Image (cartoon, rainbow, N blue to C red):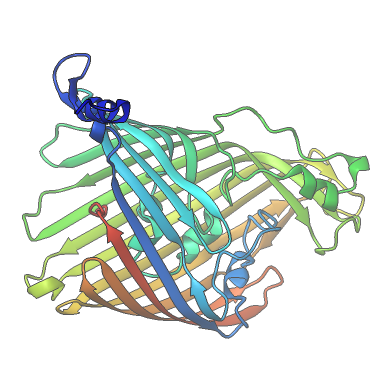
Length: 431
């Protein structure tokens, strides 16, 4: 029987060919054959604020008040919720590059969380990553939501970086030093766009809706890259049963904007716009111990992380009733931290405890006045059952006190019963 054109095409597509350098055979039939995984999650949620717990956290008193003021809804509502779903495609592209793509759906919209390529064969322990990725600053920032030990973002990250943390487009360079212990140094050059808190820019439509156009508005957006980071991660060799890692981080946004409305009433004469720079300093410590028990029994993981943010800005435009005038300098400092531990109670059962604080240091200097804000705190208890490595059920109880800019304290109580299921091939989680 004479072969058809379609059969010939399929045979040619399936036949192996050599790479240009002749070193590795590449099959066109498997040229796009990535590892694929789908992470499913959902929860039954309740808080004592009629489902507005996430919005209450976003509005916690701090030096970034007004940033991203027009968007809420990161958190769950009382009742049943579809949590963030991730579709992940990853592959070794060729001997020189790895690639990864992650799309996240949060029940309202779909967005690209990661889309990057990374080198495989650079000398001297060097690696370069390009595209869109989670920044390596801090400890939790580089983790996907489904890998968190607790279902909700900690207060330090939520108030200083935003619920999603620092994700951006750019370049990352890391170097694994030839030391007798683990030592990695890294730097990132990022576009500095679409940030929730750190390096956030004011939307033109928001400015027009809040600030009287006769007094002007925020400065024009500069060309990127507008954000840079440095980080160091180090850990001694403690043997096979234990691991310890220390981390230092620094990030700087060369353009940051705020649009402030003192009485939260647009066009009432007290609004003003700021522009300047931000700096973020971080330190983290992680300790892990293998308890030797069956399926995680006796295992222990402890994490502590501290973040400190400083802003240095000038007033670009101000209405007549604003507490500052155009050209005035406005500075601020705010910190946040959390301590958490997870212990293997029994095979496949974990107990987690976390305490988190934002705003131990929390003040702004504007118009010759020093304005201080109270700290917000929260404690969380989590009980987790892991039937297999692909599934997880978690009951979480949280209680905290959230302060607003007026100094009023609002008790926040939250209950979350959630599931996370992993379908398909999924790589190991980060340290």
